[in-house]
Image (cartoon, helix red, strand yellow):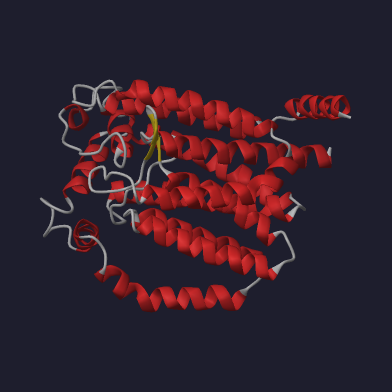
Length: 368
């Protein structure tokens, strides 16, 4: 029986390798390479120089997870998604009892490796929400929604307001697209709008400052809005072709804080100019296009919801990160997918895209 299962699995893998989703894979690899080069440039001649080696390690780990995700049997994903979901929630609870780093409790360390449960929760949120919505079980969905709201609260307590908002927005978009539970998402949206003043009042001072700086950029150009103002100058100085790799004055002089994470887009804009930025946007657009194609063509509700949730999650990160670099959105700690420095984020998006690649290959096999 075991040999029969293994033989079928090997044949299944061979068939899927022939049907591999080249566009998504190539876009993923190119963004990973650009991310490594950008991080290396961002930290050159700074106290963080050498951190690109750690990022390279995470890129390799992420690529391994990306590849493994493609070959995990679909039934395995659906079977163990609930277990993984609740394990990550447990990690979100445990992280609140860890030692703060820069005033936040976001990391769990396993020996030399540290990871952020809140980043991994983005993955399990997509999987579990897709799983419960594809089931005809309202009680299971309502319970899952309660757990998602509670998880957003745990993430908020770290504090990580931006990720908690991403979690809630993702839940809203996927449920809205499903066309079900209209009263629930309508009441949730109304409650969020009514409660927004209370939420703002209870934010950390630096979080309030980011919003105030965005609203009054001239007044706070040397304080809350400083990072954004410097990023805008760096991007503007890049012009059409850019100053050249590792040749950006704003970057080399250290004028843009957090240029390896939140403001890495400014490094790309300064060194590669409008053409470099356009190339990155094309790569992201290709990924979003393939996810949308999967959503449009899939007949399996699980994959349908996973595609649309993944597309929204990636788009939200891109839009928010680039928006705050250009000064059209408030500053948050949301990374630029596959480019910003950060191991948990890179691995999370690698797995999401690996699973999406697998789903697209399934669709091709069904429709061949």
